[in-house]
Image (spheres, rainbow, N blue to C red):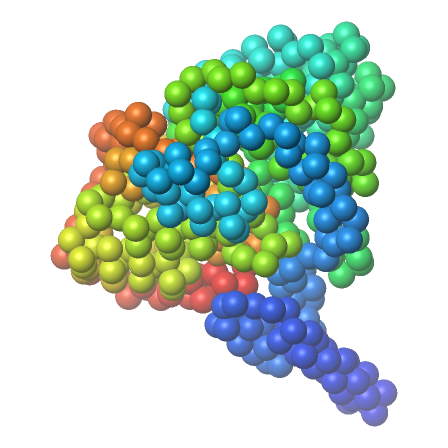
Length: 476
């Protein structure tokens, strides 16, 4: 080998090692991820360095000063409208009040009353409700999606938005640059020509942040006229309606919100829109006074890698530890952090009924395999695990003691808990919890229970695959 090649290799190796201090300075709360990246860079200097640039950046500098200014302007606009927020004295009588306070601290949203919340388990009905509300819009339509396909479903909803924009309704559409990677100019240009404001939600204003394939905006939000909102697990595309012959039936859960909680979703959208475009949505007409639409107490939860706390890991951990009777959890990707796995085990060991519904088949089957690495430990503690067989399970729901519920976009995996921008809604009271538990019971008819004794008989090759994939969970 020539001296030139040796020099290039040595210099390249030393250059990649300069990434090690940067890895340490990433403010990681998961030390295992830090060690994994350091080892990858040292052992595979070129490959490891490229992987770190693509996947390893966990935090985003969100133009902090300008973002805080926009948030203060938004808060000032809304400060005179407290009648839809629970006051501290009222909150004392609500089950889950400590979780209510936690969400307030880590996410910045107060619990609101007077909402009408509909839990929708049929994806075709979800899309029908969204189309109906969009068709009835008079002033504004705001949409934010992780995945939007250019297929029949995506085109149909796009064309409806174009029709409303031409009728004078203000329409804004925010999509994730990776989840909706294949949204092309041919699809988007008719929207722009009709006056729709379109933006890519790829976070980060610096080159290194835009290189990262982390920091995805995984939220699904629709807000119409500031008073009706939708959020949950469902993206826009044929597959989410069960029209993909390879995937088949698609199980998902979504919410329709009327009332003050829809206004909170509007605020989440406004912050993301400001980050993507620099436009501050502080116009009063975007935040109308929300009339009481029903009797539900709801509180929006938003979280992402721009905050001081890992909002959803913190909330899941606290909720599991609050449980006294039962925990009913459904998630489309189950690769918990060690802290959450321990919380589930501990809950089961102290006598709480813990029931977990996860996919048996999925759009990303390797995620199912990696999650199985946790099964034996959880089953030994008394956690009941069921794998859904009818088709991909994409719901993300949690109920605690039949009185507190969470529905939204975050899964119980490293990416949702630590890397993605996510949104959910906490629901207080027995009515929504009862509906979710009934849906869970229906889903169990299409699921198989995991038996500990039988699970232990799986082959060594299967165990090797599970453990190997699990190693990559903190960094991928």
